[in-house]
Amino acid sequence: MSVFLHKYRTLMVLVVAQCFGQTAAPILVLLGGIVGAQIAPSHELATLPLAIMIAGTACATVPASMLMARFGRKTGFVSGTALAIAAGLIAAWSIEKALFSGFCFASFLIGNYLAFLQQFRFAAAESVSPDDVPKSLSILMLAGIVAAIIGPEAGERFSRVDGLRDFVGSFLGLSVLMTVSLVILLVFYRNTSMESEEVSGEARPLKEVLSQPTLMLAMSSAVVGYTVMSLIMTATPVSMHEMDHHSLEDTTWVVQSHILAMYIPSLFSGILVMKFGVMRIIQSGFVILVACVLVGWGKPELAHYWGALVLLGIGWNFMFLGGTTLLTQTYRASERFKVQALNDFLIFGLQAVGSLGAGLLLASLGWKGVMAFSVPWLILLLPAMVLVIRQRDGVK
Image (cartoon, rainbow, N blue to C red; front, side):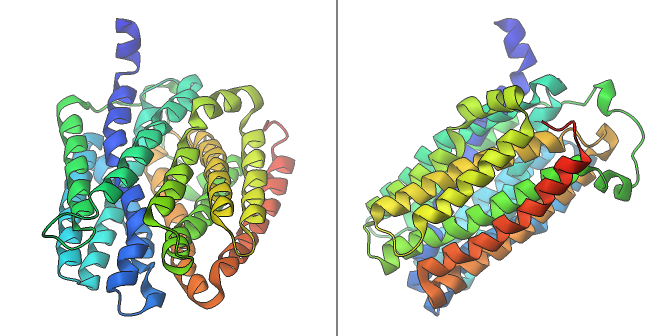
C-alpha cells in the first residue's frame, strides 16, 4: 500500500483537489445562461458569460503554461485557484447589483482559472510512467463525477438565500469550494519532474513537432469534441429553462447527467484505450457524437434533452481522453509546455466560437439551429481521421 501511495501520490492529490476545483465550470454552465437571461440587456446576450468563460480559458492557456514552466506547477495551480475564489465573489456581487458587465468579467476570470485546471492532466501524466498514462488520466477524470454532483447541487441548493438576490448564494458557494481545493494544493501538492528517457532530448523546432500525424490527430479530436460539446451544452440550460419552460430542477438534472456522462466512462475508458488503441476510442467518440445530434434533433422533450446530453458527455470523454493520450506521446520534456499551451489554446479558442454561437443560434434559429451547426464540425473531423490513418499504419 505504501508503495502504491508513493507511486501515485501526485495523482491522488490532484484527483482530490480537482473534485472541488472542477465544480466551477458546472456551476457556471448551469446558471450562467439563466443569470444572463435575467440581467443581460437583451436575450441574445444570455449565453455571453459562458462564451466569455471559454474565451478566458483560451486567453490564459499560454500564460498559465509559461508561468508553470518558470515557477513550477504548484505556483501555477495555487495562483489559478486563488483567482477562482475572487471570481466567485465578483460574480456574487455583480448578480446582487444586476451588473451584467461585472458578471461577464467574473466569468472571464473563471475561464482563466480553468486554463490552470486543465494543466492537472499534464501534471498527472508527468508523474507516472508512459505505460500508466491512459489509466492515470482516466482516474483523474473521475474527479469530474464528484464535481458533477457537488457543483450543480450547490448551485441549485443555494440559488435562493434569504436577503440575497437569486443565485448570489450559488457563486458564494463556488468560492467556498475553490477555497477547499486551494488548501489541498497548498498542503499536499509537490512539484514532480519528467525523468523518462523516451521524452528527453533537446527541443525541436515547433514546425517539426506540429508535422507529426499523431499530433494532428490528438489536437483535431480534442478540438472537435470540445467545440461540439460546448455548443450544445451552453445552449441547453437556456433552451430548457427559459424557452421550453422546464423547471430548474429538471434542467439541473439534465446538466448533472451530462457532466456525469462526461466522466463516468473514465471508470473503463482508460482500459479501453490500452486494449483497443486510441484510434478505436476516437472513432467511437465520433459515432456517439453523431448519435447525440440525431437524438436531439428537432424540438426535444425532456427525454430527448437528457438522451442527447448523456451521449454528448460520453462522446466527449472518448475523444478527449484519446486525444490527450496521443498528445503526451508527441513531445519531449523540453517541449511539453509550448505544445501543451498550443493544444489548449486551439481547443478553447475554437470552443469559445461554439459557445458564443450557441446564444446567437438559439435566439435566431432555436434549438434545431444549434444541433444543425454541430454537423459541420463533425464533418471536418472525417478528413483528418482518414489522413492520419493512412499516414500512420501503426496507429491502432
